[in-house]
Length: 384
Image (cartoon, rainbow, N blue to C red):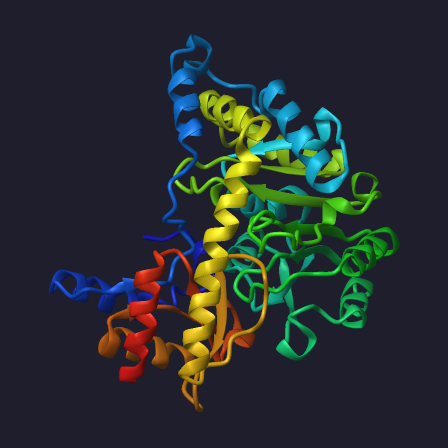
């Protein structure tokens, strides 16, 4: 029996694909999974060692401070100063149980039922489900390859002028891997000041980019902390610790305060040992690990792109995230193509339609397998 509010959530579009995948595994087939953004890289050895040390501290076996240990926030502040040139106050940083959790709760914290939320299409499905579940009136802004998967500023302006309460952005972008120029962030902050819309940027892939090509972030706008804006960061991709569930948000103290107030009523914060270990890595060898991580993803991206090009596939060109956004050949639907890849080539990818109507005609490859497995997966595509 489901609560009525659950009926407002979109259906699980990948059920048939998931069932076929599980059947293939049960049959003993060697399926190469390029569908999920779950890094296969090992976290920094020093991070694991720091967690072991932190586990011996008695204070970490009690409730942590709801909004995060001050020492962890200090490490985050130093990271933001290095990465973005900003130095927020304690009440402008909120520690999260992974950025997904904070993103999912944001509409509950800043919107009332019936408020309008503007979402990107294609986009990370959590934006839609979170806004819908919070009772928002959802509208989308199409991201097209012809504009580099960047929203048209005039479309954003008209949507905000119509009375939007919340605007979600996601750069570096999942699923397209697009990056934004600082001008886009300056534009949306101006729209925030003009119309009162809350601007949220999901920067989960902030540190996944080709060496020497650091991507622009909302945080780099000097007026972020004075605007109705918030940016979400994740350590899942940064340190390859998706299972640990730790991230943070930074932004205007009123928005951070609203989200923190909501969370205080539904969770008990992030395990303190995780905060200590990740904070020590932020202050220690974390940057060196990220450089190594970026080199490995770059090699995978270059290898996959070269092989796909030989087979006649078109990939959107980007230096960020660990995804490839690839056009479906001919006039096939993305779900049909993904099923065909699984059934005939034993390769699992994500159909673009799962990210919204504008994702139709594409599929996403996650570069979360070793180079030899990626090469094997793409060679198998020649069977199609």
